[in-house]
Image (tube, rainbow, N blue to C red; front, side, top):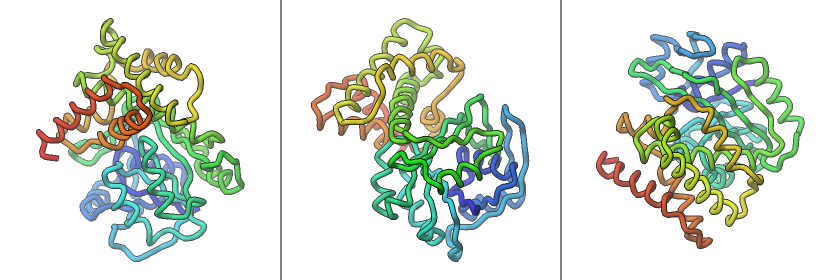
Length: 306
């Protein structure tokens, strides 16, 4: 099975590297600068699950077309439009596209750009970043990709992809309820990124103060009420479950949004918190803390000239 990964950064580089480590046929679609870096130094991963260096196959985004069986979309939401154009020459009728973006809003765009039947649901859990040398640093136990047919069916093609993804040091899990799992992750990541970005702090110091814990719970509830009003298929008791996950997080754990802010990079404020605010306004849900967080993120963008 030929696998194309858009990008070789913190997400695509890490999970693509684990697939390469197993022996799968993986190619990275990257910019010319990243291609030169990979050809010179290789794909360097420093991980709590084991370090590795690979010599990956790469294509640049101006390359001629070549067919692939599976495409993993690991771009940020603000680069999605360019990413869809970049992978288009490599997509055939049989190609399955698996997006690993945060949030939900992107699914409509991808399913309208390509055939809806080609687009799986997908998400990932990993704490990783790329350092100044282009090395991938993966720093916590979590390293999971979850994917599945949008309608929840466990099809033969889904099983074939599951087989190709199996046997790596990372976890690749086929889901028969991918929509619910994506909404659950959206709830978690919007809360985690929102509260850590607002406080400009890892989760530990926020969680371990009385008021900080209260704010985490309040944000969870505001987002849960918004999602339920929008008809999202979230499970009963999901806030309590996700609070228990927060309790188990390393005190030094930072959201990727906070790490991006610390580097002065672009953030997914509109795609994550902004989209939730649109839903809240549409269904008349009061979300004062979510609104404060979104305003804080927009001020950051304005001050950073993003």
